[in-house]
Amino acid sequence: MAVLIACDSGCEALLSDEEIADTCAFVLDAEGVTVPCEVSLSWVDDERMRELNAAWRGIDRVTDVLSFECDDPASGVDGEEAVELGDIVLAPAQIARQAPGFGNTPEDECRLMLVHGMLHLLGYDHIEDDEAEVMEAREDDLLRALAERRGEDPAALNLGPLTRHSAQEEGDDA
Image (cartoon, rainbow, N blue to C red; front, side):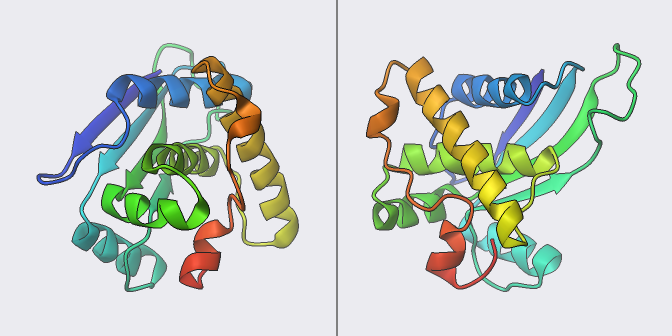
């Protein structure tokens, strides 16, 4: 598993590169992905995130996370070349601003956004309510398991509404 991480000038990452790579690998393992994979993660400022959100989703405002799926890990890779899963873009300033409204620390909110982005790269979606319920349940399971791996009490996590919580705050279907 390879995670390529880039950080725009002026952005402050909310998680270490090591935690990002570990989280991505954990999600892939939990989802039964056994082929080598590559993920790109970019930390961007609010203006860049607003531009990306406007260009790709037609929503002209900052959002917390965007995911751009590339290859399906089940697409039949020969085992030597890594599958390019896609790109995750995180806006740390937006994540930090919204975290208190959901009772989260910026780091916990960022972990949620990272897991959310990884699940999108693996084909999960939340457009329909039934899809959102499946994705939220998976996010909950993964985030609690990750907390336990970090030596934290998984029951103490304040996850609140997961997949749809951005929509509740921003009024869209992020």
